[in-house]
Structures are given as C-alpha cells and as structure tokens.
Image 1 (tube, rainbow, N blue to C red):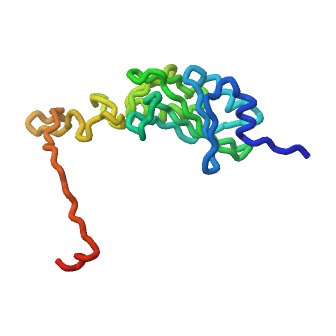
Image 2 (spheres, rainbow, N blue to C red):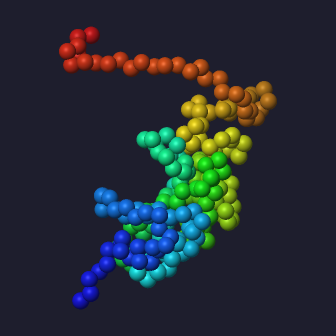
Length: 195
C-alpha cells in the first residue's frame, strides 16, 4: 500500500519552479504564482492526474493597498479550485505586476465559468484580464466612473444618477451629499435603563 502524498508535496513537486509560496493554514492550502505564468500553471492544475482541479469555484479581486502595513503589489486575483476526483480544495493567488494598470491573463479558456467572475473583478477593481472574450462591466452602469471596490474610491462616489421628470430620462450629476459625522449614543452598564 502506497502512502498518499500531501497536497503541498504534490504541488511542490509539479510546480516547484512556478511557485512563489505555499502556505497551509486552518486546513487550507494557498499557493502564490507569478502573473506571467498563470495560464500554464492553471492548465496544469486542471489537467495533472495527481491534482485534477476540474472546477473553478470562485474568482475575486483584492486591493491590498491599506492592508496592515502591506508592502507588495496592490492588486491580486484569488482563485478557489475544487478537485472532485481527490476531494481537495486549493486557493491560488496571483498579484498583478503593475499597480497603476493591473493586468492578469484570463482563465476563461480553462474554466468557462471564469467569464463572469473576471468581468466582476474588472468592473469592481479595474483588473484587466487579457484574452477574455467579452471584458465589459457587469454590475455597474456602462457610464459609471471608477471602480467601487478600490480602497481609494470615495465612499460617496463621484456622480449620482437620478431620473429627471422634465427631461424624461436618467441624468448624471456631481454628488450632492454633505459629509457628516454621526456620533453613536453609548449606553453604559451604570446608566442603562435610567432614561
């Protein structure tokens, strides 16, 4: 009887030159790979008989710009993969090399369900997926300015949209919200119920 290799050992054996890091925490394995190698690595994760990560469960963008003193690339794409054949999950993280113009290759040709996930990351974070068949906004309006999940996007936005009954159409105008500070009322144990 042969002993089954751990996921970490199999990943290290197959992807040793392509791995930036492998972390196991809380029963989950996360690997970091370079953006330039994503297409080859993802195809190998899907096709290698030892791994067979046939399903892309999720893909999301991340903005690390204000993350606990983070000193690395600002934008990452995180992929969650599932191997039905081996009953394993894997998280893959890829950092975009340019913070001003984040670009990562599309994996929609490997897992077709990545199509809408990549559109969502493009819309909300501004991450460009090269080779994507139809990269356009999916959650915000086509005229929307900016990417609302970026940490530097203002909480009130740039413009507001409203229906103008005189023009009988939707119009965009600069945000007219006055900033305010709300101080919550604090109930302390010693004063509780005395009002």
